Amino acid sequence: MLHITSEGFKIQDVSVNNLVHQFGTPLYVYDGKKIIEQLKKLQTAFAGCDVKVKFAAKALTNISILKLLKKNGSGIDVVSINEAKLALKVGFVPSEIMFTSNCIDLVEVSEGVQLGLNINLDNLSILEQYGKKYGNNYPCCLRLNPSILAGGNYKISTGHKLSKFGIPIEQLTQINELILRYKIDINGLHIHTGSEISDTEVFIKMATILFDWAKDFPHVKFLDFGGGFKVAYKAGDKETNVNEIGSHLEKLFEAFEKSTGRKLQMWIEPGKFLVSDAGSLLTKVNTVKKNPTITFVGVNTGLNHLIRPMMYDAYHEIVNVSNPEGNEHVYTIVGNICETDTLGSDRKLTEVREGDILVIKNAGAYGYSMASNYNSRFRPAEVLIYNGKAQLIRERDTLEDILRGQVEVEI
Ligand code: PLP
Image (cartoon, rainbow, N blue to C red; front, side, top):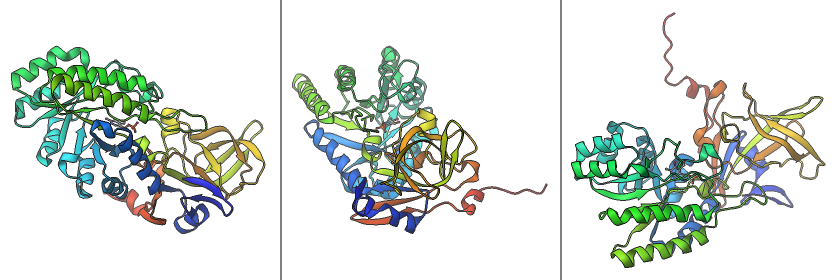
């Protein structure tokens, strides 16, 4: 993670200046040690619950990161068949892979079945199609919508009544009809209520619903609590107290076992918790634009590389690593994309000069994985610092990447 030393800013033990010198900007840098630390925190917090951590691959799909997580005991949660193929490529076995789809067709679900993945279904129509095709030949999990409004803001909340995700718990009767008609084998129950949930109560509410339903589904072997564990984005931010949740849930799993004789596994699907803090986006200041009422700092990245500030009003701390001793001024940091792409408004930064390097923090989750070539700009390179060594794990795009697949016809 980014920290200041007498020799300037470093990520782990690697100087930011050296990273910029070696790999250029814009550049995503991931701290492998921090990722492992976060994984261990969860494995420890939920050790009493027979936990299986399944990294939500959508947060950061670089195969070297997936490999690092696999090596340290993580399973994986995927949302598309292509993510599943990436997981298989780096050695995850199908039984470690949870395929949590939404609004996909039976063809893609069936590919998941053929690959031997765990299947998670989130609407009645696909459940019926699945039942007709597989009956009780291949079990599946049900993703429920519990009508809980939780998480950082409405846009990242997925378990409320107006959300497209999950089968509303009010549809229990219809679910049961389908299960009876097609003899569908339900092996798990799943709820993911959204992102950035710091309130322990939300997890307890989810648990109450999941355990209640599990009593009536005798073949259920695991309860999946999804992701959503919050990390701090700025000083004073609340982080999810995973130890507190772990000790509450441990008691609930024990009580369930005592009353039913069934020992269930606990699955979780963290994305941000594992990789957000570990990731930094390094960018160069192209221009300092002093308008009468506002000073803009224009950088060589934008919403094409980090869309979260615009999409979710997400706050990312920004540090000027080139001028740590400078006086502080207020700036609005904007991208170089031909759209409004404000990365941070009214931020106090040490004096910013053209050519300075800024580090955008907490950029590991949903940063590169949501990046695009908008404005025909290249997506950045990615570097992993692991065992003290900075290694390129994805090359910066080139013009060939932008042209790949385009077909120039005779006009
Ligand atoms: N599981 C599911 C089904 C999700 O949709 C998501 C995020 O969108 C996650 C897990 C990971 O969430 P987070 O990154 O907030 O932990």
